[in-house]
Image (cartoon, rainbow, N blue to C red; front, side, top):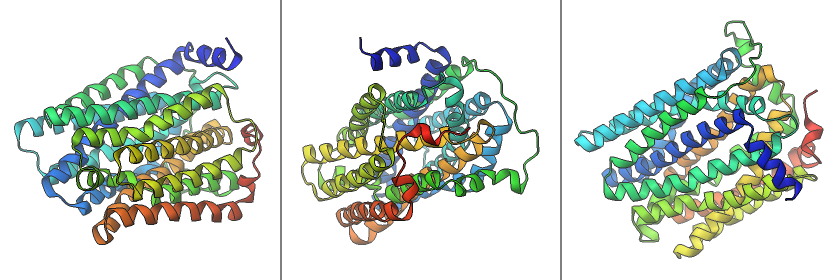
Length: 411
């Protein structure tokens, strides 16, 4: 067996890491099932692209309101318990959606309220879980651990949309019931994680303490560049928010086809994650990140213009693979360059940018599609992503010149 494969297998035998992966995998699986069910149910109820975009905005608003408090909580309290509380909230919300759908009383305002609750849970869970990753990963294995974690997330993202689309076609309430069960399984896995306790910030939240992560990111050009690049690239290239429209009106498929389209980026991402888990990026890391974002934009353009189901699936798979390269670099860079006592607050800034790019990207795409149509909206987004990557190469020469992730490690 070659060294990379041996190292990856050893990593998976490290129980804190394995339970962590289980918790995050179940949580992501539940989220992806819910995304398909919510998107299809909203569009089935209203037929409105604007309502699809509004659901993304409503999911983002809790992040904007609570994310800095969430980051401080991740640095002050046991990160495992914070994540568990969020997964309990998600499970309860998803169970309510299942009940409302089966009973027939679920309305659009009720769905929007549930989206807000899921947004609150995600806002607090993500910084805590991200900050926990270095604690459960053996020394010197963070980049490989990040790639493995990303691969597991992609398995959930492949299975989640497929299960969500298939079970919605059978019974609209079924995907919510399955997602709730998976959220509760994530709670159990988090409870099995054993890690050494770290000294937390004992101070109550204050202006300086809450926003310390912002100051840290502003003072590190490489971190600022990679986070902001992800924000603008995905904000502009958020074509996946338009998948219900593409599935029904352009590619002429149903809920199962929507699930396949939703899973396609994750298939490409999984392939790339396996490659990165076996062969970590060793040099020219900054350039590789910019190249990945440009490929992401070009794949979005191909998807926007496609009228073939197979070409659309291929374009989405390439998009997912390129996004994974960018994601692994960003996550490893942020964790390596941040001291443990601040990982929650810096992770909160990272999550704010990432969540803004995903949910505001959904709002931007849905709103633009309502005025100019789905195809022009996706096409504009893809071209804009390429232009942003080229501009960021000039604005952040420190990131472009980054040779190795280990060189950014915090002393």
